[in-house]
Image 1 (tube, rainbow, N blue to C red):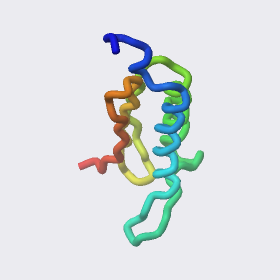
Image 2: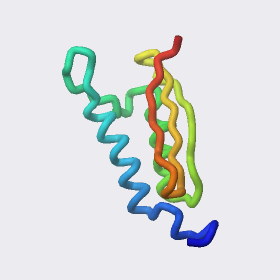
Image 3: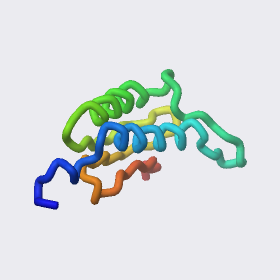
Length: 97
């Protein structure tokens, strides 16, 4: 493959799969006492920003990264959604010190 070749980029379907996996993990988050907690709800403070970035990532031809505050649990969400297949997506929830 040539450098800069479009085949190095994720397809729309691949980007949808990346976003869907993240959403599925948020919807089925295991809480401290082992219960399943849905963290992907529209009432949460970070939801609109994250949804906007997910939609932009799927529609665009460039990587999306960001950091957003999840006020309800006192954490930051950090993510990097790369366009290139050779780079793995990153999505973490970090407790603020």
